[in-house]
Image (cartoon, rainbow, N blue to C red; front, side, top):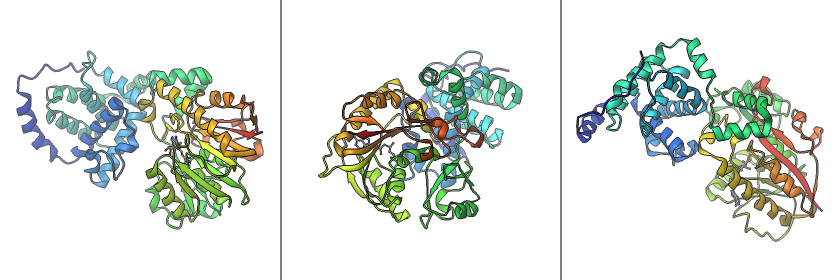
Length: 458
Ligand SMILES: C[S@@+](CC[C@H](N)C(=O)[O-])C[C@H]1O[C@@H](n2cnc3c(N)ncnc32)[C@H](O)[C@@H]1O
């Protein structure tokens, strides 16, 4: 049976809230679900990044109040609800006789939280349904929908796998603006492959300081063609892994290692890592023995970079400044600009980015990147190298910015050669730039989307 929208309750809302809130807040397992629905609202309705909401120190109060175990469940629900948002919406719609009222945002979020557990997580169905109903009963905005929540979610638990598959298959697990941009940039087939790759949880990649074989064995990891180590997505907390305390490695997606490699750093070089925090690429350059200056606008992110370098026993001079205004005393042999971007290349790890970004963000970021890249010309000595990179899949932020920069008189291209990026040879474009997407290395779990281009100051 399908569910119909409940009629407005005749009971005064205030009274309902008081009675139900007391009852609901004590129920086991309710707090992480309530927090998940609240955080989902913040992501979808207010475009707040999930990492900020679930930061263990400065996150959303509803998240901070959870026990560590419940934080894990809350994050798992959110990542799942966002990764499969389109298909969950289609499944919920399939259980409804008529669409939800357009202003019933809280109801929609609660249903998504319930459906994510039922369809994708190994949570007992009865708990997912009962707790969603209790949550609805305890919320004055939702109490009149409690029976609808029950009917929709119970309906989902009874749906056969085949039926779920058939409904989910037709759904788009991305916002329209993003799917349209992908199709424009990559064509229909590749766009579909990228969207498909986004359905998989990303594995955990590590960059090792040395002894890849030894650490691969100790961690039970696979050595990737570029030398990174790969662990499954379900890896236990990173600080608990062998080698973390002693600073033997750091977490970095295999594709994210490309930009720093293009610097070709040697111990005699002076290199500036602009937009450096939290420092994965700074660590790579510092490891080569080059003298590194790591600059970032954000003092707090720079502190994380310093902590990371300390753990790794690597060093860099750090500068908290706006690159647009920074004027160092002398020029560098090479600069790396890993520019701020829409980050859509990291959607496998951060499925919220697709729902918090927009065409307008992409265009704003592309304009900022052009300004920051222009600054690099003055920071590097004549003959010096400039590497421009970012983790957006959108060609307006990658290829278009690089093309416009390359047209400047003071700049010439410095194409990337296959020998420089083992494993990523096919990601080199006709222009000598590098473009990866999550559909690369599909047979071994994919990589993040990255763009990188290299230039020389004439
Ligand atoms: C993509 S992240 C950098 C990631 C980093 N390179 C790594 O590998 O760990 C972009 C960084 O740019 C910084 N940023 C943004 N605008 C900036 C500006 N105007 N000047 C300097 N840094 C800026 C942000 O604080 C952010 O840390």
